[in-house]
Amino acid sequence: MSEFVWLEPEPLEGLHLPDWLLTPAQRRRLKALLVLVLVWGLVSLMHIFPLARWFTIGLATLMVVHISRLFRLQPLAPLPPLTWATQPEPDLAPDSQAKFSQSRLLALPRVAVLIPAKNESAVLPRLLESLTQLQYPTSHLELWAINDNSSDDTPHILQEAQKRIPHLRVYHRQPGRGGGKSGALNEVMPLTHAEIILVCDADAVVPPDFLTRTLPLFAQTPHRGRRTIGAVQVRKAISNAGTNFWTRGQVAEMASDSYLQQQRVAVRGIGELRGNGQLVRRDVLEKCGGWNENTLTDDLDLTFKLHLAGVDIAFLPEPAIAEEGVTSWKSLWHQRCRWAEGGYQRYLDYWPGILSRRMGLAKTLDLWAFFISQYLLPMALVPDTLWVLLAGHSSVLLPLNALVMGCLAVAFYRGLRQVEGLRGQALWWQTTLGLVYMLHWLPVMITTTARLCVQPKCLKWVKTTHYGFSAEQTGNSSPKQP
Picture 1 (tube, one colour):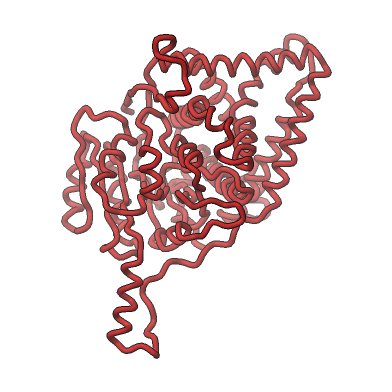
Picture 2 (spheres, one colour; picture 1 turned 135 degrees about the vertical axis):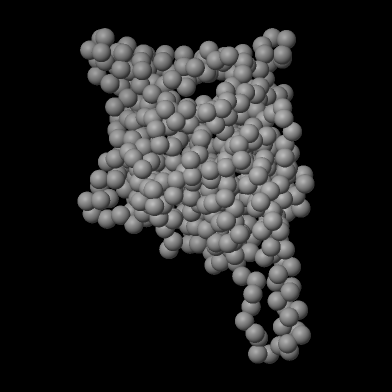
């Protein structure tokens, strides 16, 4: 697997210490170290002074209130699909009917599909074929494939695809251009003329009704305290689900993520982008300065920038976009370490905006609840375990850990029931498998938070290799359609 290296980001520059005092890399390491010291110190304090354990009880109580709302509220009903072809109106003359249909067609938003591709010859043909099946007028659709200096057969595949897909445009990046996926997207976006930008990874498979069912969300009028929709994310399905334990675990992971995303949006919390299958309004994207070329996770970074810019991110469980899951522990480790590090970095980078409550109270509370459960608790598990093993104390984090595991079990159960249609013993078995699989997050997060305290100046991103598994090879079918 190839590696790409780029410099660390410098967001919200005016809120940091000057360069003559600390470099950007040193500032991030200092913030990560301070968080680690505070977490370890607080856990040790609760072990030394028993009364301090009431802090855990109080925090668990507040999280119970949030989680109860999370599981209780119902998501909004999906909007009807977008249409532009109309049935003949009996009261209209033929020429008037044609003008009416033409006006509806002209009112459709233009969409640009951006496909960053570096050495993706194994999966590109499948994605391009699915894009030709999109139920959307090609007059309002731009397809942009970005050949990011590939050394395999990717350029030839794109050249041949242009012969049968007239509206496919290919952009070849020059050698030495940096920024990874974000750099490729930023380079091509000014060449597009669309109001909506759709990003598809090269291993994706897009269902035909993808645009007709996602675009209506952008036309929603803000109501009941909700903001304008600036982006839409759909559920991700695993195309090679039946390969082994790791891919089956990813199926459960994506199902639980889908359920939690719906519920977080329902309580006016944080909707998050997932990179593949994300649609973003061009004007909002330009307001945010495009994609951050100095981050490990462009989607998670953009999530914070969009919410800080004052818009909402909607989520749809259907239609789903299929992608290839990693098939080995080593590949999963590299991918999840990148996700964990990029996810944690955004809290370190954008903390002034988070603490200023620019996102609003509901989003800020939701953000803190997931930051504690996803990042701080794994970090705190190390000192808590050391006190238990070396001093014979009881765990002070047991209420919080039990609460998070219970919440995760419910998310797996409801998510698998909703998107995979499982019932009975199969549902319980897959839920258990998902919980066992998710234990990998503990060593990933513990290692990541420790590395952030001492990491070198440059970040390393290990590209996930795609193999182009077929449904016949894996025993898996296309994403479930309602």
